[in-house]
Image 1 (cartoon, rainbow, N blue to C red):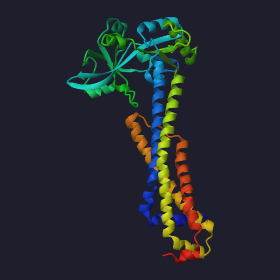
Image 2 (cartoon, rainbow, N blue to C red):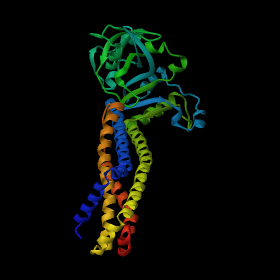
Image 3 (cartoon, helix red, strand yellow):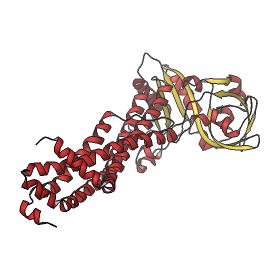
Image 4 (cartoon, helix red, strand yellow):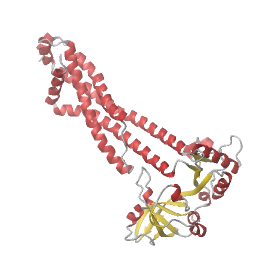
Length: 407
């Protein structure tokens, strides 16, 4: 029998029960859309984070104090020295001549006010090398100069979102921003970078490290982050190893004594991000697959109902010569068609939702890999065939005489 005949019969049967067919495919639509959205967001998150790493450059390494998530709590409590100070940074720059540039950083959220309006911003305490090291340009004003750092001048370089939130009119340069402890004169405006999940660099406010440290507690002053650029004749991974060895010597650590700091090269960060996003994808994929399973059960249920409703039709078809495999093929096609249709709608819906959520949460739309799109069609089709197999087999085994008697 030509495949077009059972396909045409399947379409007619589904059209005869439009609402039921639509409700049956709903589970498949939700499951596939969820897969596409999750993959899109995870890919967008990975792209967003990797862009930040790339912006800093392939020769830039990152040093920070250890955090609770870095190791088991029992090991964390054994570390005696978790400090990273300016003295450590200076000693490191002297001990590792392959470091061509090193920048101290301290992050602190703060409320800022200007012209009667209030906004929350990210205060970044750093020095004049931060912009160059992170490839960030100014659209107006100037960078910090050595005297700003030496004298602890109360000046600030602000992101475009800060201007927007505070409603600063005209040229923002020269405006005074106030925090709970500081009054800062705006001397520069950062270029727009775009928001990422949980982080909006456009609402950053940079202030001289010396200005910020005076407002911090003694403990906070000893928990700095560093960025260091390694001589290009050395790989970043080798540079990270040199930095770690040098810091251990500076801090007097011996043998296998645990370090109170972490050193990351761009390659290591990329590996960590890929591992995290891979885990998120696997876990989320497992969760949303439940929706596909529920959708498959719905397909089986509705196909069993369809077999019962069309018992007499099956009897007529068998009486005029339809073979068992013809009947089975028709019902399998109906089940697979429902699932593939749901998969197609789910893919379209997933793309729309993924784009909207990606733009809102990440500031960018993540790409969906080909394997996800192929899976979005192949998995529902497989589900349709698997869950449609029992109803189709049941229909094909009906006795034509008994089926013709069915009312």
